[in-house]
Length: 522
Image (tube, rainbow, N blue to C red; front, top):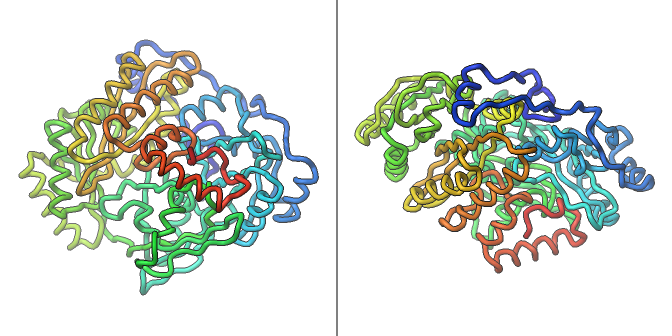
């Protein structure tokens, strides 16, 4: 069973550890001496008064039961914002000004639908809450003009509804966290194969409405590519989508819900394509002389139709600090750029695919370091390291983008230049972990000595990087979503007509504007 998320940091409280001496030494070599930054105690977090009137709280209790409308301080704190670095810096400093008035826990589609309609009627803002892992302000609803704000916690919706072994699909409720969903599916002999870094705490519903992409996307695809059907509760009625694998019945409305971040409706069931559980998993490390040479090799693989399950490349600096294996940060590393390839399936399939990929990578200038399981064992640990560095006054955050292959070199350099221009002399690392025939994502990790509380420092740097991304022809996000943080740049990316389309959909599906207000729609 997954341990409850720490209230002021990422993940399992049992995994909280100070940075190692080698990691601290490496960081201080880049940013200078650092010092501890304590976090306030949970009891000292400042909460706003509950804004929901007593009769409205009574109305919610009548819908879901007294035990499932929570107004205690700890529940409200635990449902305040997400897990971006600014989110954590605010809560560590005792600021819970965005806390919901109540946490409401419905069970099943019908209860969700009743709560959604009630919120619309009573003009109560509703924030769908799965795992609470948003890193783009996706859980910070606009409060002005509403009778109150609730977090709609889907934790009681954790069923595996159905498995169709002939069609190879499974229907899941949205509150299942990644490990919980995999455990249920594995008992049926199938798997999603969806493993983002947030896997341990992100939810099935969250994967769908943020267009999540997992670390094995090369082989399994993005989450939106494996969704075949959705059930959604909206203020004007229910929406059931996905009667067939594919069709020509007008625009695909599933795509309208995926990426909607709770602004158009609350997803109550997700039907996904599944695959048989692979009996063999093998991960291999490769080296390339430079980041661009490694990227060219990735492009050649994809355009030749060669797709290992995992395909990932760290740039020179990320390779040097061993960020692909957070437990080894600061340890000695080899020169060049680290590429990770992964293969899943039966033994014959793994052997065949590994042979083909290895021959191609060797021809493209790569050198194999052999089979290495360290990446797989530490694949979810990056956020823990981020938090331990925040403890010693090192500001660490990530951002990501995606563009076409021809624009990758310029986008890579422009984002690094923008971050350096804003932050002075930051550590900027980058990797590619999602690859397509036509382009790839770039995922940047940034570290710098914290100035003040670090919040304004990062917001200025993120704005500079976002401006650079749009100017270079990149997308403002590949898989983190829009939330509130990316809205200004989404408007630039999709243009005024695109903005009007989003606003029109919002106005028709959510006429009172109560669903995650302020999120997604510019």
